[in-house]
Image 1 (cartoon, helix red, strand yellow):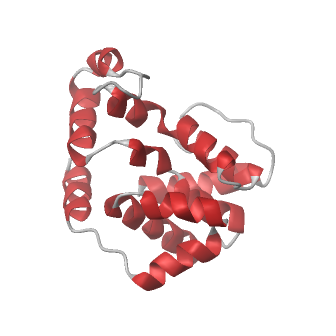
Image 2 (cartoon, one colour):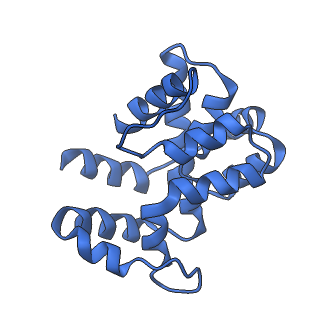
Length: 168
């Protein structure tokens, strides 16, 4: 519970400086950097925090760092803070309601709930369309899967590293 409270507080106070924007632009292909710039500040901050954590752990693979920056990019299509809070509460209290509430129709008010549940797949599509490397796309696609993924090496290790920093 305290983890979620801290996340909420960080989302409200998120800041991203021009140097970090430049870092993201350096790591990402130009169209993907535009995707990053369109993300709300709290998602940018979270993604940059992951990038920094990966670097502190000795990870400097460009595909992995790009995946860290864009792993939540689909949420920029309409997921607001209140959607995130409602999703966390519904997942904890009644996950079946969340599944029924979510709608894949982008014109629906229920679409942000669908994005919360399916953002890895949608994010992978956006990253691929923005010219990201296939490895980056696959890391985004699988970053929240809990079942066994049979990704080849080194993707399996990169995915484990991404999950480790995203879960902390």
